[in-house]
Image (cartoon, rainbow, N blue to C red; front, side):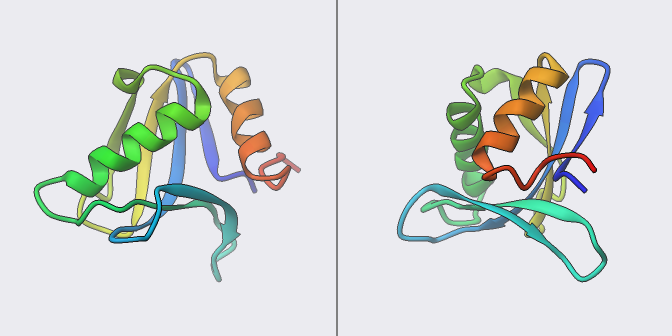
Length: 108
């Protein structure tokens, strides 16, 4: 399963976030025990006052080449597993996520 779900206006991307990391980076795709996939991301920001979520939004926007305003955390605001809504062309975004994840995000 890919780490995202297509929508009419873009995609919902599932992310596992690790705050307080040494670097801001995306580390590929991981599959949890329940079989769901998510993109692994690390940010230097601390998880206080939404700082880590904002850093994640900026990181994903930059990695996908979309404006920061088109990426927002829509679920899991205080949890490690988050859902990001990314507004744009779903097919193009899916291709970019697949490239980020090293081809692990292909639908089967």
